[in-house]
Image (cartoon, rainbow, N blue to C red; front, side):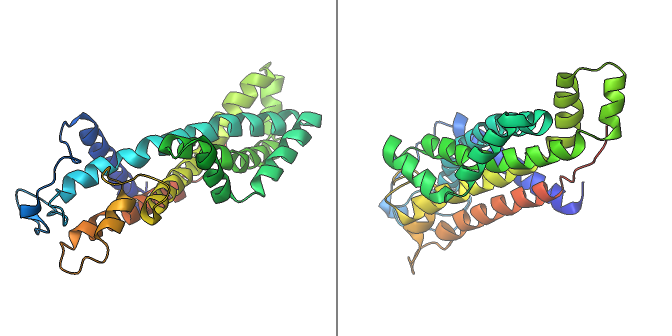
Length: 265
């Protein structure tokens, strides 16, 4: 693992730790309003200071991770399950099923993903879990096509022929030798990119308003919007969520880029 990947893993570990801490904590960031301590700078009592309503920025930053963590993981799951299955079956067995699956994937992939997600949350409700599921389904065809190309290029290799000669069945060859051995890095990269996309999508919607997480429930996006432009306020009210968004997306991409595929049997 190179230095960039180690940095990315460390940042994601801190994000996960913050999310876990926020999940088990009973600290009420919504009721924590005290105008007498508005726009305070960082201190031992408030590590990142307070916003212009007197709310603790550090605790709101931790609690805001709940807005995207669950939906991001849901998006990765929803995308991976049908995407891997469809791409693997189409690539390995071919035939009319492969043609139909690839045609469907191509049709979905040509549609604007952002519009599909907005359409889903407009129809089914402005809910971050709906957003995560919609993002996962919108990007499943991309993963399916990548898995298809990988499986289709490997299924005639010598190690597959050798496995067949040793009596291994098609399912064993497909799920272990092709998918697990040769496609897990591809799927991991896709999941990391999709997680960062879901984070960016959630924070963007929460920032512009209308969709996404609404005040007073914290989100990195609405925290940034809430403090943006407060000239006499605590600068960490806006800098903290902005840096958190940037570092998390950077970490996902650094870690994803380190997952180099190793073609082996």
